[in-house]
Amino acid sequence: MTLEARLRAALAGAPPADLLLNDAREPAGPDVVLTAAAVLVPITDRAEPGVILTERLATLRRHAGQIAFPGGRIDPEDDGPVAAALREAEEEIALPRHVPRVIGTTDRYQTGTGYAVTPVVAMVPADLDFVPNAGEVADVFEVPLAFLLDSANHREASLNWQGRERHFYEINWGSRRIWGATAAMIVNLARRLA
Image (cartoon, rainbow, N blue to C red; front, top):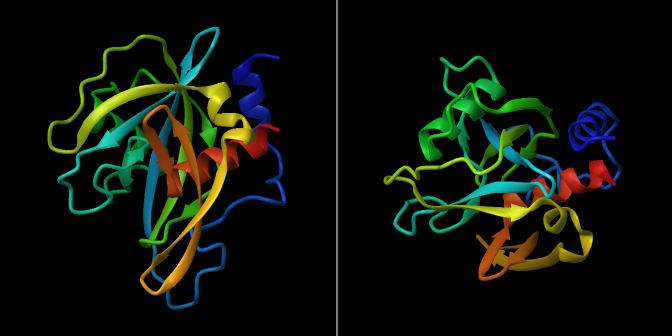
């Protein structure tokens, strides 16, 4: 079975019981208003596929220096999460909207900062030239998909944030630390594909 077929089958199936739903690992209260967002999970179409990730600028007000998928808020003019993820990828890394072959969306993830993020999984041609948006993105890089999906690379960690102990996953790739919501979405995808 091809990777694309495996991804389609995994996204269409029932979510695994150990799915990570949010940063706090507890349901949102009735008064919590979440901002809808979407990210693109671009997987390179090659014999040894990889995942394209960005490093956010260290000078940004929110999530400075963090590793993330291209993405952001769903704007009113976006036709849902897929359109938002494709628009954001074009804005952040100059990936033309018509290039990704969208496989589908996967499990919505709630961040501790109030976003409900829908990951959009897509295949992209290998060896594209990405251009980081100078106002948002410090770097664009690729991590082997097999490395990201290997549960041996998913480490649980915790920290105190706003007076509460927060538990999260992190995945270390060389000197890069992928953690928080991005790591959780990767863990969720790995669990769907397991």
